[in-house]
Length: 88
Image (tube, rainbow, N blue to C red; front, side, top):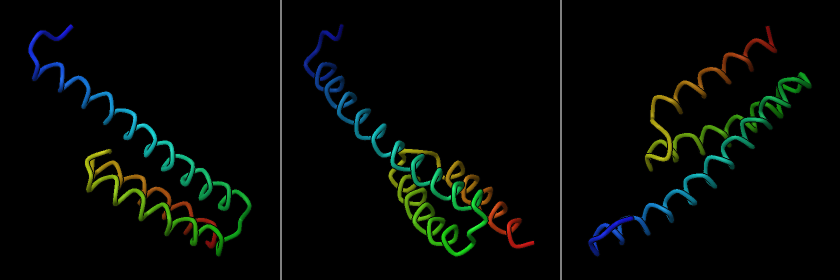
């Protein structure tokens, strides 16, 4: 357990940030699943629309340091490859 006031405050902040970051990661995971579902259904138009939304979420999460920027870039790249494979 933290002893100093600053350490106790830091613990409170960490709890708040943890909850917020977990919620944001959940939203991202749900959006990525929507993209994958559209790809699975071979619906390129829906997949591209969902991909745009996923891209926005991944970029924003990377900017806010919820996830690492490279992780966001890697996920976007993987999704784009899968969408392009549907058309090929």
